[in-house]
Amino acid sequence: MKKTLVILIHALVGWGLCGAVIGIGRQLWSMETTLAVHLVAAPMIFAFLSGIYFTKFRYTRPLPTAVYFTLFVMVMDAGLVAPFFEKSYAMFSSILGTWLPFMLIFVSTWMTGRGITGGRES
Image (tube, rainbow, N blue to C red; front, side, top):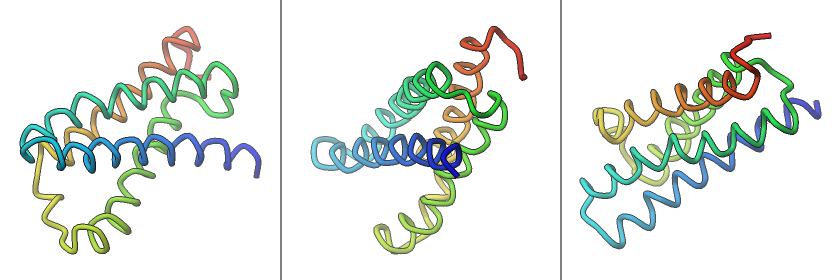
């Protein structure tokens, strides 16, 4: 249970920080600029959090961790952000706003984990 909670907390913090980038960005810039900033920020946020996770905890290997973090973000976006905040699933039609960040969250988490674990998946 503790291990699951640690993974979920890291994923939740990353998702929350990405949400903050979008929320603050909407107040400062156009949506296109906000999405571009989010596209850069999301993998950086998750690389940082993955660095903490793999340095201090390392309960899971890099590939499953990347899957868990990415799926958490996808589920939260589909189950909370789209229906309650956006009141629409239109965000999922945006490659820049949704699909590229998901991919980069996955890649940055996986690569950070591999870098810290010496490239081992075990």
